[in-house]
Length: 306
Image 1 (cartoon, rainbow, N blue to C red):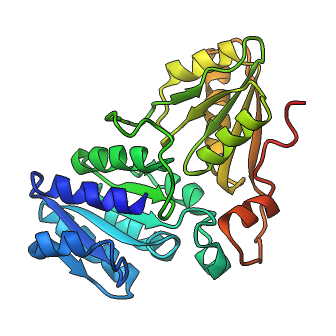
Image 2 (image 1 turned 60 degrees about the vertical axis):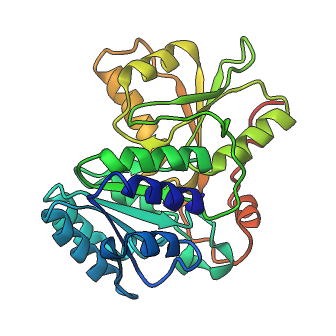
């Protein structure tokens, strides 16, 4: 997924002369093509992510659309003050690219587990949060962020993930959209909404257990199209959210918020039951593969269906 995103950014930089890429002394074997092709628009800032964010804000004030690149928590949690004051307060065109969403860097332990980032970044005004599910969505995210003016966050998994969408077809994504991946069995009454790379895990489980649920990919968290959620509330009795993120304040919370606001405002006659699957609100102090830590955290649909 990260390779696809950076490769696409290289392609886009050829025609978007405002794209500038910063990294925190990593990305070797991934970022070299960009650095070689656009040496005047690439800078390795070193292991200094807070400084990298401030440099990005300054470049954005000069007219660049700046992408910062680092692992999981380092360009996000470590830089919350800089993101809030230097980037989002000024509505600067800085796009934070964090590779290693959720437990993608599971063997490195809690310091590398990116499991609170959605909650923290979606709370900041002006920030657009994007969590692609596969390389096809990652490519679409790069296209969107290349033209989006203002702050953005792209939460990508790592590398080697298979394409879930048809890779021969161009995919366009934008905030508010949902992508229906499974139609669901008539009369099931349940839909699963996911964001990020956990989508493949969910689809495999739904298919293997023949659950018959409708399944949606949600590449953007927040800024939802309320008309789509009105439709979901009409079509389904139960909505299940699945995310590789803490339950507190994450994707599932954002779905509850929009549904509750619609119900309170009279936009829907009834509120469907929303059940959340996510990481329990505690640290999982283990090191292990992404799949292992997903199992330990209970990221499955085991309690649903038959």
